[in-house]
Image (cartoon, rainbow, N blue to C red; front, side):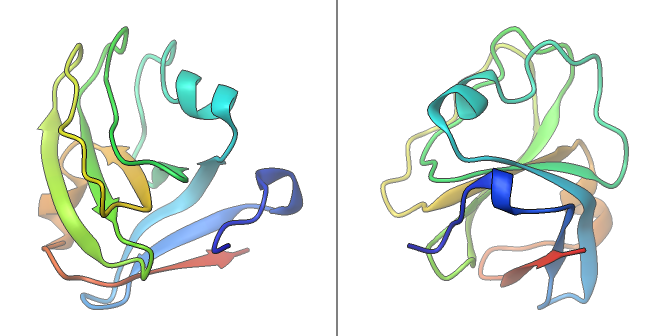
Length: 126
C-alpha cells in the first residue's frame, strides 16, 4: 500500500519533481471515507501553498464548494495522468480507473507551476 493513515503524518509538501516546482507546502491528507467525502466543503477559499491529497481517489466533486480549484489525478507511481484547471463549484469530474489519488489545489496552481501530463510528483513530510 502506498499510503499511510494521515494520523501518522505531520505536515506534508507536494513537489513536482519534473518541473522543480512546489505545488503545496501545507498539504493535508484525506485518506478515510469521511475525510474524503468532506474534502474542502464548507471552506470559503484555499490560499496559495495549500493542498488536499485524497487517497485513494478516482473522481472528485465540487458540490457545495464556493470556489474553483485545480485538480491533478495521479497514478500509483505519482505521475499526473489527468488534470483539470479551474474546476468550478457544483461540478463532478470524470472517473479515472487508473487514478490512485488526486490532489486539489488553489485555482491557477497548474498554470503557475507549469504542471503537465506525465509530470512526476513527490510527497515529503516536514
